[in-house]
Every structure is written in C-alpha cells, then in structure tokens.
Amino acid sequence: MNEPHISKRIRPSLIFATMAFVVTGMAYTFWWPLLVRHNRTYWLTPGDIWPTLRLAHFVQWGDLSYVYLFNYPIVTLPGFNVLLAPFAALSAALNLTEMAPGGFPFKPEAWLLIGPFCFAVAGVGLFACDALARRIGAGVTARRILLVAEAAAFWPAVVMWGHPEDVLALGLALYALSALSDDRPILAGWLLGFALSMQLFVVLLVPIFIGVTGIRKAKDLLLRAIVIPGFLLVAVLAPDFHDAFLRLTKQPGYPTILHPTPWIHLAPHISRIEVSSGPVHLLTVVVAVGMGFLAHRWRHDWPSIFWLMAVAAGIRSFFEPVMAPYYVMPAVAIAFGVGAARGRVRSILTLASGLGLTVMTFSHSNEWTYWLEMVGLMGAMFFSARPPTPELTEAESGGVDGPDGAMSTAHG
Image (cartoon, rainbow, N blue to C red; front, side):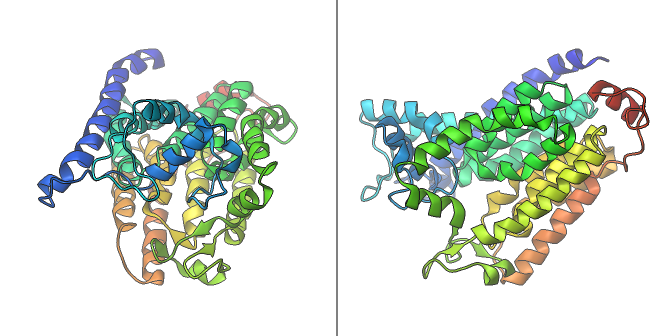
C-alpha cells in the first residue's frame, strides 16, 4: 500500500478530528459551569487567551513594538498576536465584549469569534503529527488511534489554558523536519521560522535541524528561518529595548500561581511573585546542542531523529523552575507519533505514560515529588517510544545518500 493511498484514507479522519476538537472545546467552555458547577451565569473560557487577544489589538492599532510595555504575561515573540490581529479587528468592529483589565464580562461575546479559530489551529498539530507517523511507517489503524491520543494531548493546552500558539509552533516544526526529510531545505527553513515566531521553545529543536543537514549546509536553512522571527525581534527591541529584552531574557515565572520545581532554588527572584527562568533555561540550550550532535550521527535514521526531537522538546520541563501543565505537551505529542510505529505493546506503553504525564502535571504536591513524578513518567514515555538503535547505513558507508536512501535502509 503506497503512501498517497494511505493519506487519502486517513484524511477524512483528520478533518473530523479537527472539527471534533472545535466542537468539544466550545462545548466545554459553554456547558462545564452549567453541568458540573450548576452555574449558568458564566462561560469557562481559557484565561491566558485574553492577554493574547489584547496584544493582538496592539498589533491591530500599529503598536506591535510595545507588546511588552504593559507587563502582559508574554515571554515569546508576538507571532501569534500578529496572526490573531484580524480577529481582534473584527471583534472591535462588531463591538463584541471581551475580557480586559478592569472589565470581566461573564460571557464575553468575542469568545464566539476567537474560540473556534483558536481551537481549529489545533488541526495543524493533528495533521503534522499524522505526517510524522506516516513518515516513519505507522499503519492506518495506528494513525487513527494516534489522532485520538494527540487530541487528548493538545486539549488541555488549548482548551483549558488558552495556548494554541504552542500547538501551532509544534505543528510547523514537525512539518519543517518532514520537509527536511524530503530534501526540501528551503521549505524547511521557512516553516522553522514561522514556528520560532509562534513559540520560543522551538529554539531547542534548531540543533537537530543543524545536525541533520550539517553545519555547512545548514546556512541556507537558517538564513530563511531567521527572517520572520528576526523581523519581529527587531520590531520589538528597537523602540522598547528595555522591556522587550527583560521579558525575553528573564522569562518570568509565577510560582504562587503555577507549580515550582527544585530548579526554582537556582532561579533569580524578580519580585515577590516572580522568578526569572531565563538563566536556568540556558541549561536546556546546552543539552539541546548535545541532541544536535546525536542528530548528526543518526541523520539517516528518521525515526530516531523524530525521537530526538521529542526529547529536545521535553528538556524544557526537566529544567523548568516553574511548571505549567501544558509545557509537557510538545514532548508528549511527538513521542506519541514516534511510538505509533513501534508495535502494539510499545505504542500502548507510550500512550499510557504520556497520558499519565499529562494528568500528573495537574497534581499538587511538594516540589521534589512533583518533579520526580514528572521526570519518571517522561523518561518512561521516551523509553517506550525509542526506535531501535540506528546502525551504520549505506549512506554512511559510502552507499546511497539522502533521505530516500536512508529510509529504505532503515526500514529494510
């Protein structure tokens, strides 16, 4: 059975899953207060989406350069705010009510407009994870089961926390690596740049791209990857260097609201309620560079490359001083995709540990218990999804070179 035929068989399931994500997400925000809390006076909208919408209004007003000025909780580049700006403009034109400083309507009308869009963005992640599973040889049945698991992994991040930009960044990064595996470095560079502009955790994946292409060939890919995030960075640093630089480098975390880990003892305190995660994040970059060296060694074995991508995405949670549950989502989603091609037992173990990790991050315990449980479940997930150890391929021994040759060697 060839890949195009498989793609056609699974495509309706992908579209249905995206639609189901939107419907269930909106139903949760409308009906959870009524059915569970027996309160019909409000909608349970994700709180973090409203600062994102407010900053999208800044973009709409031509104030992109000042998105960090008013102490909004944004610690990444404003790429998603730019994407959301047309919806912010339409909401304003229709005079829809929305959450804002000093105004807290119980049923913000703007949610009817931006909610479906933010939930539909998850479809990019679903399609990208399916492309990953197809690329490494997962069958149709495994990919359909994977769809449900990926939707479960994305759901808390988008529906409960209001961070569709994280799922969008993950999907774009996966498509970038898939394009690279198809020997399309130009497309990979642009997709990687879009991903970086959405969420900065994608920086941890860049060494893997460099490792796959090699330092010499990575130049063209990186030149394209820095265009969009570079433009956004200059746009926010030039007029308001102080606020933008502090936000992007200090990476404020809120231990009184989120969950502290043992790394908080190494994080400088910004204020009574804020700590700086930026210095500790430098450790994640160092480990990510190590992932890049492994990626170069295994560059002809794409299942192992995608697995390294999952590990690189999970590094952030290993070293995070202040954890939010949705931080584990990228690692869980990629591990699910890799595990889908590992056979029934390994796939089940990957799903069980990944879903257990997702649920566990919502628990409340002391910092050491929380961190050890998280690391243990994440380690079990990575171990279960791990492809067989790559052997010397024909490409490395002087035979066929390139993604197609490598894949034929890896899979027999």
